[in-house]
Amino acid sequence: MEILSAITLVVAALITALGCFAESTRRTIILLSVQAIAIGSVTLVRCLIDLIIGLNVEALIHFFIAFAEWFSAAVVVPLILYWGVVKTENVVDAPIVGARRLAILVISTAILYMFLWIFQPQILQEEIATLSFCMLMFSFSVFLMVTRRDSLKILTGLNMAENSLYPLLAEIPIMLVPFILTLMIFVTAIGTYIIVEAYRDHGTTLVDRWRWLGN
Image (tube, rainbow, N blue to C red; front, side, top):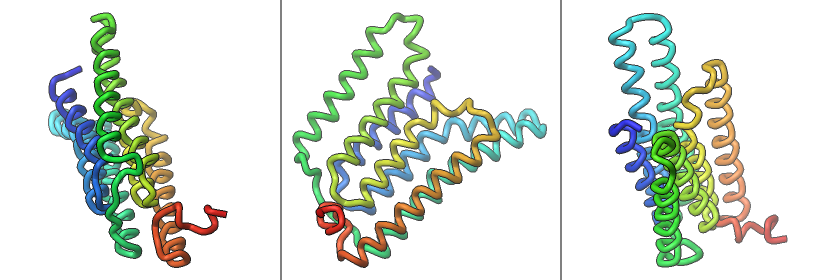
C-alpha cells in the first residue's frame, strides 16, 4: 500500500473513531464529512492527475465518477443529515455504554486489527492492509450505531460504515456507480425524513422514546 494511501486511511480511521465519542449531532455529521473527504481524496487526486496527463475521454469519465462519489459522500449526504438537525434538534448525549468502556472497546479493536495485519505473511500484508483499515473503520461505525439513542447519529454511523467500504469498491464497474450513489442518497433522505416526522410526533429523536417502538 502506498504511503499516501496509508496516511489517508489512518487519518480516516482516526476520524471514524472520534465519531464514536462526538457528543453533539452536528459534530458527528462534521466528522462524517471529514471522513469522506479523507477517504476519497487520494482517488480524486489520482484521477485529476490522470486527466491532466492523459487528456482523453476515459480519464475524464473516471474523474467525474470519482468527483461524484466524493461530492455525494462529503457534501450531499452531510447536508441532508444537517437538514434533519435543523428540523429537529442538535442532541447532545454520551454513549450508552459509557465513554470509558467505549474507549477500551475502540482501542482493543484497533490493536486486534493491527496484530492481525502484522502477523500476516509479508507477501500478503500489502493486499490485506487496505482491507484491514476498511474493516476497522466499519467496526468503529458499528460502535457508533449501537451505542447511541439519537436516530440521526445512528443514521450518520450508517453512512460512515458505507464510506468505510469505498476503497474496496473502487474497482467496481462504472455503470454501477450512479446506482450506488443514488441509493445512498435516497436511503439517507428517506431515513432523515422519517426521523423528522417521528420528531414531530414524539418531540424527540431518541429512538427509545418513540412510543411506536416502545410498544
